[in-house]
Amino acid sequence: MDHFWTFAGSYWWLVFPLLGIAGGAARRWDVLAQRRHARRVEVMRAKAELKTVTASTRVTGGGQPQPITKPSPLPDQLEKLFAVHDDVTARWLEYELDVARMIAFPTMSDGRQPLTAAFLRAKKVADRLRPPTADARVSPEQLAEYRTAVTDYEVAFDLAERDARRVRDSQFTETERKRLATAQQLLSVALDDSATPAERQVAYRRVREEVDGLLALSDEAVEILENKVALQIERPHPAPDDERGPASAGPRP
Image (tube, rainbow, N blue to C red; front, side, top):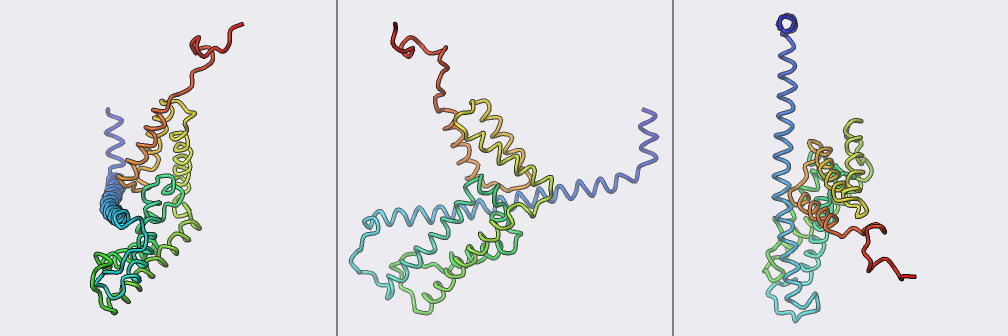
């Protein structure tokens, strides 16, 4: 105990840098939590919009031509813009809801990256200017504004996606890249039906540990991954030949 107090008395000044490190870590966790919440709201809104579009398409006959009885002066153009808008949103959700893609292309989910931030801003503008339905009455000016917003949205996504595939995980440190690579390998084990249930469970938990603090996984992405792992675990595992019963032992001599 005397040695400890002697050490503390000699190196008391270490308290200040340690407090700074602890404060920085706390701020980083807070930023990740805020990003996770904001993206969760954005993903939920996008999924709800796509479900609404799918349901309306099913009601109107699966996309077959319908009689034009809409009050909108340019219904066909609106429907085409809606299709492009929804297609870009669906492509974005493929990254937001797939943990493997998030690990492989992390900048697509990082709003601090300039091109990703520009895409997210373009998405908000397009979503805000989108008419509620193709039946809505819109002026030519409103239609032109929405068309420009959808074009910007599509171009911004293409640029962000191209950049994400180019840089991959180069924005991270060497240690962080090793953690992401380990998470990618463990993820393949968690989804491998040839692995045992125990191996898949351990691999899944390790994946969460490796990406914790590096990627802000949305709750929806975690839920989808958990369901995939559960399906792999519930899949029946073939028994070895020496454990099979008489019925599967083959013809008797």
